[in-house]
Image (cartoon, rainbow, N blue to C red; front, top):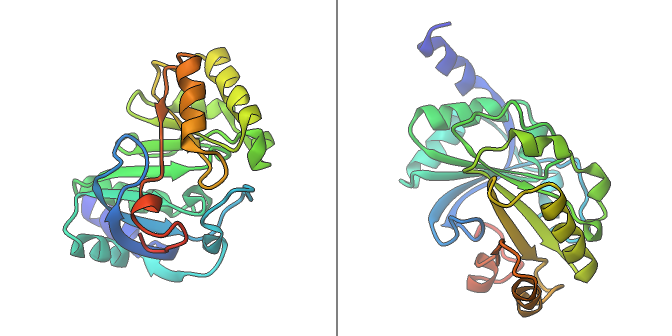
Amino acid sequence: MSTAVLERERAATVLKVNEIFHSIQGESRHAGRPCVFVRLTFCNLRCAWCDTAYAFEGGIDLPVGAILSRVAAYGTGYVLITGGEPLVQEGVHDLIGELCDRGYEVAVETGGSLDVSSLDRRAMVVMDLKCPGSGMSDRNRFENLDLLKPTDEVKFVLTDRADYEWAREVIARRGLTGRFGVLLSPAHGVLHPQTLSEWILSDRLPVRLQLQIHKYIWSPDARGV
């Protein structure tokens, strides 16, 4: 198949899109960078602390070509594909491929319950491992860990000490540090960042503390930021 034909086929792929917006990346090692967010609709999980439940449904059908046009209008070279759970929609791979082909720096946020083996290796993966406090820890697909690149990241969202101890045990047992980035994030408004920081320091845990900085810049309930 020629490149031109592949581009046309990808551009025609339709995705259910919840929102597209330009903001400051609030998470990962790229926190603080201007970013275009493409939030897709639908999620196969229902985490207790979810802050984007509005993305479970709704949105509009957009072909990949139209999404690319909206992304290009912001003039920013860094794009995050998120949800919901973006891997629920098979067509996301066409969007990711087109963005990478056009020279964008692409990151994909996934909840970790779905197979990541088909993701374009040029994209950075930020994958959750769901702690018990999420109510979804039985859905973790630990096989994904062996598919991640050194440039990818694994994130634990913590609600309490039990979640912290679970994450600490998983990090040690599966030898996560040194393989890719490991992030511990306090569930906003549930676990205080100072408390989590003190646990990390006390245990000399070689991880990165992550705060959702967009929730400190704007209202925690604001959309499109």
